[in-house]
Image 1 (spheres, rainbow over the protein chains, first blue to last red):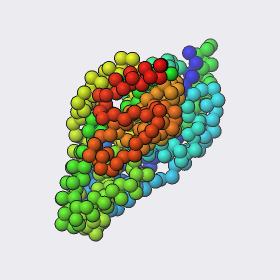
Image 2 (cartoon, rainbow over the protein chains, first blue to last red; image 1 turned 90 degrees about the vertical axis):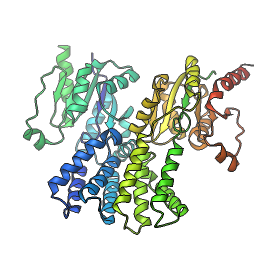
Image 3 (cartoon, chains in turn green, yellow; image 1 turned 90 degrees about the horizontal axis):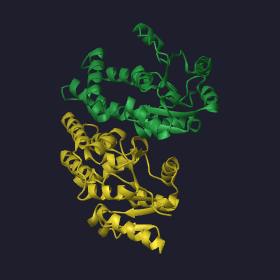
Image 4 (cartoon, rainbow over the protein chains, first blue to last red; image 1 turned 120 degrees about the vertical axis):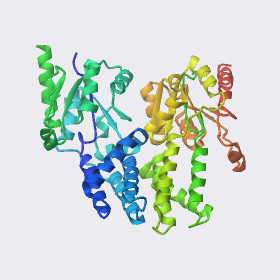
Length: 236
Length: 236
């Protein structure tokens, strides 16, 4: 069956996000340098984030609350007001970071949208994701936007069900194996992986997936051609 | 045209929410009593919340961040770490408050769901609203759940469009005139208002709406009968 609907992840697939969180993390470690070494602070922040994920979910607001909690812990409860104020300001800056689509993304989406419906499927803070999509100028290329609290096989099943699309007519594209690729493949859909950080991906010797419905891309801009080839092979 | 789809607000329509925010606000004022009178603290918190709404949206995480910001301001930047820790704990408690449907709500929804599709339409933190719906045990009565960043005429138009329902076959029910009733009426849909706080509504001499598609209820439990009467009148 031809692919009729393409799901696209947003953060670090259409525009950069992770780098802003990493810069904020670095500034957080600097801010608390009098109390603990940077690596200890980063590790504690990561632990706090993971512990709070169940309650806060993904996004900049929960991240800010986790930074404040970590600062309290790292200072033995004696966090200076100025540090709290600076963390609040960093969190606001994260929410206000301008959004710029990655190179070639707009043209690629326009090409894809000619023959297929595009759906944005992303996690994070509802309002913030809507604002980023609006700021990106890419909104009108999507026929639906799904902001979800988690991306599991059930999430994709629900979205496809509502659109009345069979899994084998759907392709999900994103930078996360765990959230974008694996649940889509499990459901019987196609999946394309575009790692957002090459250095990281190479260093960690990412496990190659050998799957007939799986594509590995170096950039989103490769998708229209790879998709055409995939469909030609399927038709042959 | 008969009403085929009923939209329901969640917070303070299906279960209590506001009272928990008010109790948290009272504890916040107590916590900072050494720095300012309770009413000043409440007013400042309200101002901070409104100023941050554009960035944080609705929900407990943004409310917590606004409490911390207000505490910083009220203490001249010298907020004690223990106060910050207590505010974080209050915020977590808000996110973990058990959810209990208001009296009669389950039976009412079951009655309504027999002949019509029910859609939950609510603002707030995405993950938290999903968790509250799950905790309420009412989830399976809804054929769709829409967690939105704002409730405007355009929001309702988008939801109805996706469901392929005409406005005059749709009724929205909720406790807010501004979010639930007025935009639905403007769109050409029906709207039912169930004020969640009688004392407040009486005190402020709420403006009565005179509109052929408007219902005013004392409790959600009145809806099935009022709806039956409305449809009988329309048919007559």
